[in-house]
Each structure stands twice: as C-alpha cells, then as structure tokens.
Length: 637
Image (cartoon, rainbow, N blue to C red; front, top):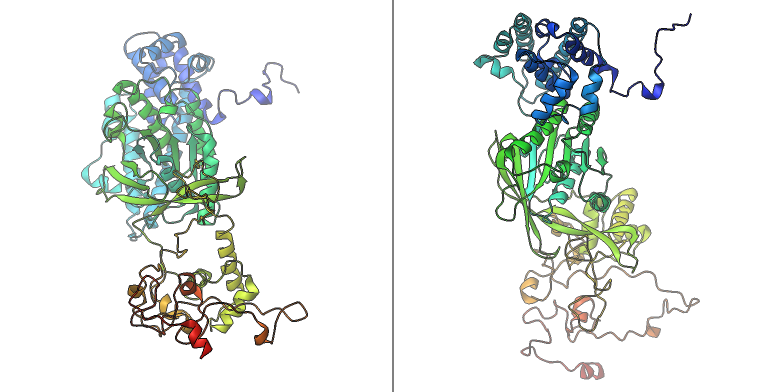
C-alpha cells in the first residue's frame, strides 16, 4: 500500500548531509534549536564528548553558551556566534549550520541514541586497551582486569554526573593517582622517534631532503621493515602530497628498486585538503573508517592557506584541526614544515610546538649526491629521552625503462644509513654468492650455466636455484649504469656516460656502486671462504698502494684473484685453435722471472713480474731500484 505522506529521496541524494549514523546527533542539535527549553534535560543525558563528529561537539558548545546567556539559539544566532569565534568553517560552513535547522523532532529521544552509541565506542576502546595490554611484551595475567574495574567505576560516576549539573559531570572525569596506571601508554611506531596517537613534525630548510626522509619512513611502516635498525610497527600509511605531487612517483619507484619490493600499504592523496575548510571533516571521517597507523601532511603551509602562521590564535586553530584528525584515528599524524630564514625553528608561531609529541630536524651538507650527508636530529621528545643524531648518505638510483628526451636516464636518490650497517651475509645465500663473485671479478655477463660450472670448479656447493638467484641479482643491479648527479632528481647537463672533469670527453664508467664495485659490508669470514687460489700475499696491500683491493690475510702467496676461467676455445672447424697451442698467437708480455704470461692488473699497470716472483721489492715501473731484466736475451738464451 503506497504511503503518500513520505517524501522519497533519490539514492544519489540520500547521504548528502553525511552518513546516517550521525543523523541522531543532527536531530539533537536541530531539536534543541527548535526547543531551547530541552537543553538542560539533554545536558543530563549527554556529555560534549558523546558527539562523534568534532563539528557537532563545537556546535553543542555554542548552543549551550547561547542558552546560558539568554540569547536565541536559532540557526541565524548560531551562525553569528560561530563567525565571532572565527569557527564557522570548522563547524561545517553556513550551509551545514542552516541545514541543521531542518532536523526537528524530539531531542530527548535522539539524545538517548547518541548516548548509546557513545557507550558502545567506550566499550570498543576498553576492548582495544585489554588486547593491547594482554599482547604487550611485559604482559602479566590479571593486569588487564583493572581496565574493566576502572571502566565500570567511570561509567557509574559518569551516569551520576548526568544530573544536569555541568560541575558534577566534570568531577566525574577526575582521576586519582592509582587510576593513572590504567591510562594507555604511548605505542611506538618507529623506534623512539614516532608514536601512535601522537602529533609529530619534521622541520628543515627547503630542499634539505625532508620529503625523502618522510617517504623512507612511510615505505618502512607500510612494509613493516626496520627503519635503518629501528623497530617499526607495520600498518597503513596515508600520505597527503599537498606539495610536490608530480615528483612523488619517481621517488617511490627509486625506493622500490633499491629495496627490491613494492611500497605496499602506502596510499597517496595528490592534492591538499584545507584544515579550515569543510572538506577537513570529510577527510577526518574517511580516515576514521580506514584507521591508518600513520598520516603524513606534506606540508603544513599547503593545508593552511590563508592562515596567518605568525598568529598564535590562527595557527592554534589549525593545530586543533589536526589534533581532531589524530583523536579520530589514533594514528601518528606527521606534519612536514619549513624552517625560517634563520635558525632551526619551524616557520611561524612557536605555539604549535607545544602540541607536538616529537619533532625531527632534517638538514644536509654537500653539493652532490656523492658527498651529501643528511642529518636527522631529534629536536623534541615530550616523554622520552632524546636520541642522538642520525646520518644518511644518498645513493643514486636509475629508473628501469625510463629516459629523458635527450636519452639521459631518469634518476632519483634514496637514503643509506651511515650509522647502521646491514647484517653480514650468511654463507650459502644468494647474497653471499654475489659478494664472492664480485670479489673474484667474475664477469657480470656470465649466465647461470657458466657460474654454476665456476662454482663447481672452486668447490662452492650451492643449490641451482640459489645460484640462479645470485645471477639475477647481479644482472638487475647492472641493468643501467647509474649516473652520479647533484641531487638525484635533476641531472647535470653532462652527456650520459662522460666525466665532466675530463677535457677530451672520454666515456667513463658510471655506477651506483663505489669505484671498486665492492659492497661496503663484506662478510669478515668471506676472505677465508674464497677459493684457495684466489688469495694474496700478506704484504700485498702495503707493496701496491695504488691497488684498491685489500689482501686476504693468511692466504697463500700469489697474485690477486685471477680472472675467471675462460670459456671453451672455439674449435678448428669454427676458425679457432682448439687443441693446438703452437698455433695460438699469445703476444702478452711474460714475467721476467718465470716466463709465464702476465695477467690481471699487473699486466694493465705495466708490471714485469708476478707479485709472488719478486716479493721483496715488486717491479712497478715507478720504482727504479728494481733490477732490470732483458726480456729479449732471456728468450734468445
């Protein structure tokens, strides 16, 4: 049977004023506008904190103030009072305040519903605290029960305080000293630097790598990896890219390539949301549903456009809006802010610093990626001891498959800790084999079959799949030669593959790795685990100062690791000289002591003897004291 007196709302307009779960709060506020005499009774049912939306909590406070002053409480009077307080936008704007007048009805009935939902949220919070306590590292049976006793006591006191007297309600919220133990403690998010349910800030001069540090933090929280040795609690990260949105993709791709995994659980909003606008409430509601562990605001200036940042009053309102976001989500809200022209303090009023749990100062020294040092200094820790400075270097990363219009590769940079070194490779892992191959100068072009054969020849026993993985790691690492640039995001004008310091433009080798291609964290026991004929003499490093390869202490006498075994020579049918040494044209210089061909760097650098043949003085051409041998006479004799 059709109902004619019901106004049907189209589906696309049904949620125009917000989710239905907040309609009870709207009916309370609208009903009190139409029936001001009901306000004392509603006060006996509700506390201001029972409202789930911060905007409704603000409007309830203003309605109570107008009623206590004997002034009208209609939508027009409410709007005027909000404008006087400069909080109209925080309350949702003129349109939203006017629409609340359309919500009539019995405010007492809807107040009971608001109270019921507030009690359910309190019980959910109780459950969260019990789980947190029971799963803590120092948890003990029975300790979480005190939360229940405290909750029941507070609920009874709160019910008694709902007598209509605001003073009784306030007294019910007071805690004695023993109840303080039941308050939840700060949960670490990143070591002792960042905590859940807290407001933190990263400050630093413009262009000093603040966003790079923040992206690195976000990537580690999203993936759950330790942040350069610091504990990390894994969770969802929401990143508001209010500044520099176009460059974020390149930085994320470089981070993913460097760490070898996707930056999962990190969500980006590539535009600002104004803290003083009505959309901030929408953002707060969206984050309440998502429940992220970390929310990044990049930057403070871009979400507070039009706010006088030197005004403690105006900036205080912005900070309160950010605090509303923190209270609604329980996340660590991390704000990026610029410093002023002088000093290390954040730009604008210093009143914002009082609300911070943590503040990190980021600065850099150096002018090129190869010599830049980024320092993260703990400027404030409200409840913890301030830790020492953290220092990072930069590593240039070339993005696979991308190039600029002139053919130069697209690059960015990632952070590498100068304080924390990764754990040493475990023998038998693909990473360990990569180190062995690098130190033995095995060609990067070798495929799995040749590396498997080489391992067998030198007694390295590993599974085939691990050897293949090591080969993939080496090839992936050298897919592109990395270009060393000043900042990683902007390449110099030098042509790709040339050294700007060379006047003749001779192509030079470029790479992410140091010039000797050796990882900085070689395992200490690797020297004794290399194939036996790969060692060097104990005095080699002192005798050949121009070499950047240190000796292998305790190894047998001999030259530095020889080149890997050459592939099988071509057959005679293919034009080769297989099986006929006399037909091979070996014109390489030979050692003047043993008459065997010189190889490796001793051949390249002009030595005339093997190191083992003349260990007392060596035979470098720069050392005239070495006795000269007549190579021609030795052969004629």
